[in-house]
Length: 398
Length: 116
Image (cartoon, rainbow over all chains, first blue to last red; front, side, top):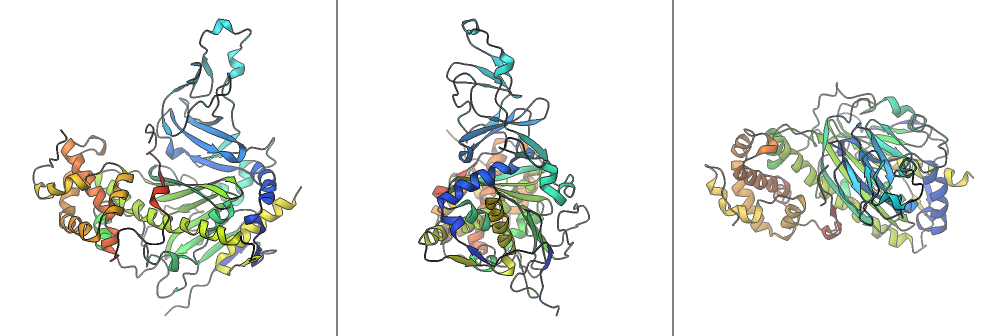
């Protein structure tokens, strides 16, 4: 029998605290500082190119954090742009919500129209306006850049780091990895909890044997790793990344066998050919690999499998409520059998997600009592230790 | 009137069409949560042995151009794979206890589709 899996830590562990003060989670004044010193200074993923399959595909993302709404649209030139979702005439909200596909947007108030590149294309009864230069009244852009299909936004006056600098070592490590996928499921909730709790619920594997014992009893760990230690955990300047250990003894259920053998395998699938995976995926090339979890600080977590990924966006509303939005992508289905495999995978993922998010309000309500001043974190929760170190350092930096 | 017909050779599954051939993720999930284990098991037991033939039949068509009766069969199969876990895992209920309330989930539409 092999030895129990020990986690190999990479990166700078200095300054990490296993005791984390609760204040950041419960204090509204603290959140107001975070809004300016964390969120206004960060590159934040807001959407992925795979969610914009056609020219004209658009989606609306509400951003209560900065009291705005973003209209994100793929133009005829294939560039994806983000705009304040607001008519330049008198500020009416241009698209009320949802997503769709169109190459122009008309304001319901006075009929002004805009192209999918944000240009003002039509003004009704235009001669009644004095000196209206259409070129000056296009939709107002939100500063954004793309990396591997992810659209990142920045709400600062002038970003002090380029997106490449912000991503650090990860920047060149995912080349092409996310391509060729389609969205297979998408869920959103509003949780009455701090954004920290929402992020933290997805960045440790310690809970999986307990919280998910009914939904995914044997996907991770196994005889040689009963406590499901992460084989690899990497702490970067701000971001974190770890790999989850597969359970080689997982017992396939009857419908898992049918759904995957008559289509394609998503998760669990532990005997995958890893040769096509870029450097950033399963970075330690652990043989019994399940998937990776990456936190892109501050408010994004991705789970990366062999040809699927889950993107989880966390948008704070205020100190005590957060929008949690999860999109699941997988390699495009070639036929009905593969489409059904996707459904099997996404449905189980949804049940696991419901368990994860069910802890949030229960925890927040108890922490709000103030009875507990600190929480104590295990080495398997090092990504959370790191999250709070980065967050607290940012709050202290004027 | 909406037809409930399935492609030839799948008539044995016709009694399940009205309740289980559901076109939307939310409808399929809510159907699961309101169903008893006994009722779910009847659907599961009927679908399980037929699944290989169903997929073999559906794979003859392009995914975005399924004839109407094949689409119905696809929706039936899709509900099956999305509701099988309580039986596969020997749950006592179709709605896992201590889980986030389904009525607070927003099911977002597929990429590029119009409004939910």
